[in-house]
Length: 397
Ligand code: PMP
Image (tube, rainbow, N blue to C red; front, side, top):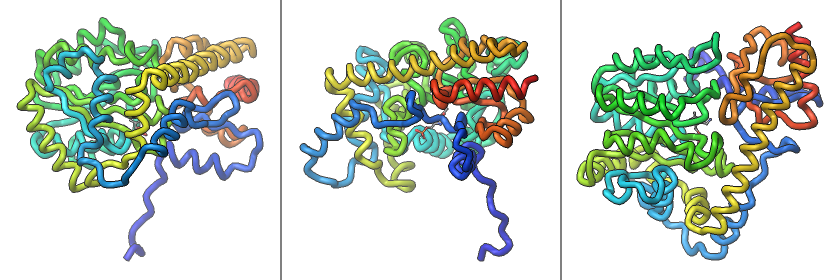
């Protein structure tokens, strides 16, 4: 049956992890896949998650199916975190949320829902974007278009070019936006720039689809949701795909959510009915554990504070590694100015390292960086930072 079928290439990012695992070099460093690592290079379970799990084991009475859209305690708490407790979007009930398996599942279910009713729409993604965005939306049958985002020369957002492109997006098309911690570049819009983008969405009547995979990895959970708040205040229709993979470190629990914000409660109920149909034929209803853990933490003030503290620790360690990398390179006499790395936000940095250097680092030093030069700063620790800085300095000489 498979004789004449060529094997598919390994996923560009997950394939790198595979190669890293098989690399026998004891000095190897993985700066590839976006997983947080602590100072010991480990990805431990957060204490707030451990505590919530202990509670759940004590109290859980059944493993019956969840509703198609997930446990209400989960989806209600997701909305509070996304919009803020006092948000009009919540009190007016014009937002609906379903638990989806991770941010990926959320994007895919949102895409499936949109495809049913807006099959002719195009989906606009930033250049560059997370590779899976194109995969998710094109596998749903959407044509993909691109809007400029990253200015390589100034290592910032090419905002004028982005605005021009967004002004020309036809009514009814879908524009995928990274709500914070843009992957892969690490450069985000300012609040003022978000105001302008949302104004264009409102004026031109295209649909913002916000990918929110890193809430709390930028400045903080409330600061990072500014794009969502602005869309909510504008009263427009929009989508949010959110994920607890990173901010709760629950990568393997597949805990995300797809949220649709509509004009009013009646429209939101229509959207939910069709979202449930979309979900029903793909995975029927979500896995329970991660959602129950998240709901437990988000609804308990003590666990919530512990979570915020642990999230802050992760965020601050990444910022410290940004500084260490920039200082490490400059103290080794590297001419190139890398100070832009400390301006970027989230787990990633578009380092500006060429594909040749990326290939050399992997071959000669067993340092794994995603093609295009995206570095996961959380892969750096006090014990490997010198090795990495030496290697990059050598490569650049
Ligand atoms: N969107 C972006 C921008 C991401 O970086 C990721 C994770 N790499 C996701 C969505 C999906 O996250 P999850 O693991 O929750 O599916």
